[in-house]
Image 1 (cartoon, rainbow, N blue to C red):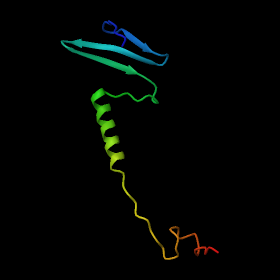
Image 2: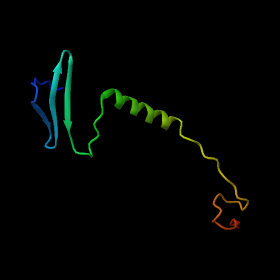
Image 3: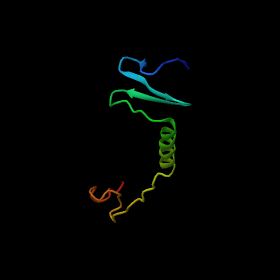
Image 4: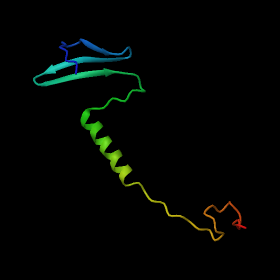
Length: 86
């Protein structure tokens, strides 16, 4: 982990297109600004963790779809009559 000291109105660059600005320091809180392309998702850590947990829960409870039999021996109603084997 890189640790830097910055003052209000100073910036840190990440690559060429992401900048982190120190907006305000008040007591033990630091307000920062993030300037990044719209293709880069920026989240507070607690929000990121919540999204990750929701996604993992959704994957774990993926719906099970029933198999349908349309009376022609096939699962696809467009497939036509079943093929008999010799």
